[in-house]
Length: 219
Image 1: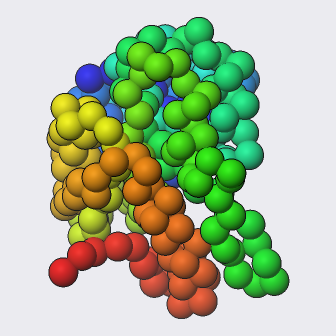
Image 2: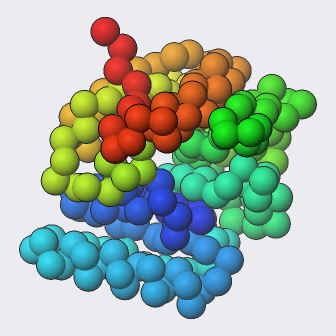
């Protein structure tokens, strides 16, 4: 499958890129800077090559990455996500788009959830996208540090929200290709606010209890 990560030079993107490349997906790293995207893509390819893994990772500007892909992950900071999507809106057709975006602010020493007037980042992003795009929210609560350790088995759950069952099944499949993640369907996109809101809590716990890396597992 062809997967693009817009803002694919960041922390959460790296682990997804490395793990999906390992199972044979074609990856497009998107960035505002073509030069930066190509440089990061080269680094990812080198990392995998040293592990004996043949990868297919290319770097390009966000607009070109979106056009090239079947699945697009919005791995951008919340404050830039909707505006970036609007700037390259013509690059979106009928792709599957995944939002792990979380709006949060720091108050004192802790992060707190700070949803937009739409109710969640996912709902705000849906408004910025063309109607033909199928949006799913997922991957909010995965710790980037653990995700980057591609030989490390991840005993976490990934909660998925979306309005199209077939699209959620595609996201479930590519999620569970990463051992031992389990994808759980939490219902419609409107439920995303509950999943997004867990992220600041996890970050606060990980900050307080270093070096432990908390995430989510439903039992």
